[in-house]
Length: 394
Image (cartoon, rainbow, N blue to C red; front, side):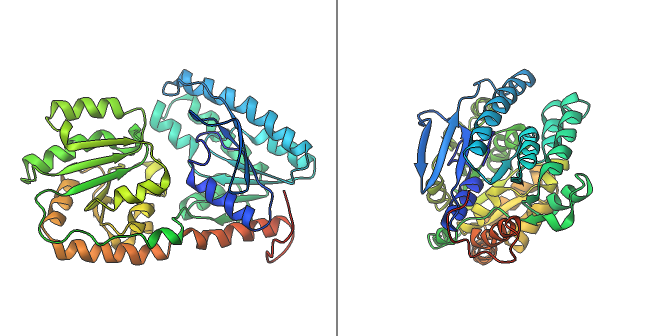
């Protein structure tokens, strides 16, 4: 498995896949960037991990280019080494889509290739650098080449599957939906929400603090709850890290809300659910757009698994994920988002009903359902209709 944009095991999708394949009898090596304090080599739950260094400056166009160049060289070299050692499958994770040369080389050598479609790299580049950026055109080409290099494509949702087939030219039979979802064991830890009318609603956000995630609106959201809805006791816990954290802190200080917000930074995945258990409402401020509308937000599944009411914008894949377990506002309408939260704070019966629906919906989204699709995809790579997956495979 080749991963560029997240350390391992921090990327929960990759960890779930790697550990599921390992449990099914495959030998799995993950090659990923090296985070602070992480060793260059280790074994985690039977998965071999090999790490490489990336440049630290990653938030400008030049910084992204330097990062991708450094990652491409190291991933190709380390991936080629694993192929020389006998790896039978190359499993590519994006973004970005820069590993197709290795994938085509693997095909020439008679190996199999899986493309794991995490994100829409062209749309992500358009969000960061503008639709007219040459990065968008280059990454659109790279996306098509990456899909063409794969024997199997794993899409996170129906929208991504449609794009892999329509835009990427993939054979529909080769594209399987492997959704993100929490493991079933996490659902057992969900706690009952607080009861009664709340003058001090506790709000939680989980995820990357980047412009496309809508986090710059969170200070204004808290200000609206205080100034327009009389909820001066409202507080916010921000679980995650990213380039917009300093700007968020400045905006909160200017609004006199700095003491109402806790920034946890990155925390281990197990602790995320403990933090969510203290929340009354979980929020996703990601605005509408070509990227967000088609993407499944991992945080939504985590909110549901924690059994917490969800308030979010009405994005296509968010509504497909949460269904009736969330309250929705029109995309980008921060006033409406604040109104939904304020209404929930003062509607204990509706909060409880949403929490109940969240737990029910989460049981339909657990990783174990996706695991079956993952193992079926690998069974087809082996030319089998089922997957007993006995014996060691690479």
